[in-house]
Every structure is written in structure tokens, then in C-alpha cells.
Image 1 (cartoon, rainbow, N blue to C red):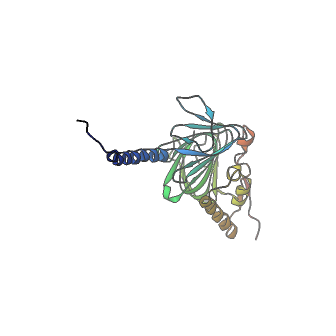
Image 2 (image 1 turned 45 degrees about the horizontal axis):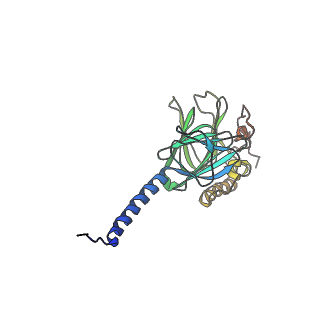
Image 3 (image 1 turned 120 degrees about the vertical axis):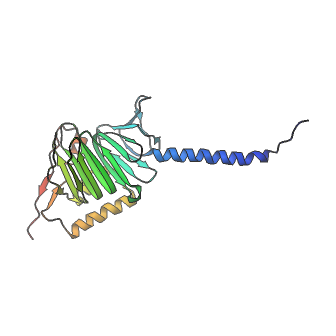
Length: 256
């Protein structure tokens, strides 16, 4: 005798299967990023496939390298609203958690306070950024620059016990082969926000813009003693594919 099986008995199983699959999708999404901005030549590279052009809104996973060409830029946004922006001639990848690898080039990193600490590795220096917005530029045989706009960053020279902490509005620039830190300087945040393509090429997320604007206003109200550094050279190497980036130019504070 044929047994009758109600189709309704399979509904709970279908619902359960949908929930399980949704969890897998969400978990995978949290480990990856979405491409949210592409300007000119932006390519994705994995160990299994040849490089291909990046497209807006596509999802990329851990271990995928992002490479930008001359006069090109890109933005990646993560599930917790963290984002990275890449300047021209940049090679970048990310691993588990907030672990980023800047092989060469310039990047902006914005991390909400609740997202914890992000770790950036470059050829010569590592940086731990928490609660804010930072910019990093690193090239072979050239000056390396680290700027904190909001939050703080702990910078360490590889192979040494040399570490410093940068606070909002501070920059340190290291010459090639540096084994100790140069003097930490204060950077002109207003000029930085007006001149840097990493900040200007598209609209910043509202939460990140508020953090940066707050520090710009704070610097207006209470200028740092000793003057500020002109940031106009930041990421110039990326935009023009130059071979030497000069150190920051210090502008003394005017009398009175």
C-alpha cells in the first residue's frame, strides 16, 4: 500500500535548511569584503586564477590581492563598516580578522571603535590601528609615512624593539632602511582632508567623516605647539609613479 506523505511535513526541514545556509553566507560575508569603489584600473589576483578586473559590489575573500594601476583607486568595505581605500600603484590583501598586508603603495584605513584593532603589515614596519582613521604609504627604496587622523596607532619597525604610538593629527616618516624612528610631527589635518585623493575621490562614510571633521575642528581651536607639517607630498608617489617621495615639510607655527 502506498504511503501518503503530506507536503507540509517537509516545510520545517526546508526552513531549517534555509537558516543554515543563511548562516554560512553571513559567516562567509563577515570574513570578506565588498568592492565599493573602482577608479580606472583595479584588478583582483588569487593563487588559483589569473588577474581580472574588479567590479562594484562584488564580494572578495581572504587572501585575494587587490592591485591598482597608475592614477587608479579602490575602496573595500567590510561587514562591520570598516573600510580600506587604496591609492594608485598599490598592492594589498587581507587575512583573518582585521589583518591587512600592504605590499606597496598607499592606503587609508577606517575602523569603528567597536570593531577592535586592525593590524597592518608592510615590508619594513607593522602598525596596529584602533578606534579611528589612519593613512599609510610604503614603497621600496622610498620614505614610509604613517598618519593618524583619529584614534591611535602603534608603529613598530620590524626586527627591532622600536615602537611608538601616534595620536590624532600626528605623522612619522621613515627613510629607507630605518632602524629607529624619526621625530613625530603634527600634520595639518585641514590641508590633508582637502588635498589627499584617498579622502577626496569619493564620499567618506558618515561615521568616519564625523571623526575626521572633529579632529580638524579640534586642531583649529587648539593648534599644536611648534606648528604643523604640510601633508601635500602624501601619496604623490602613487599618483605620479615617482621613485622618491620627499619627507614631510615642517611649517613653523607663526608668532602669536
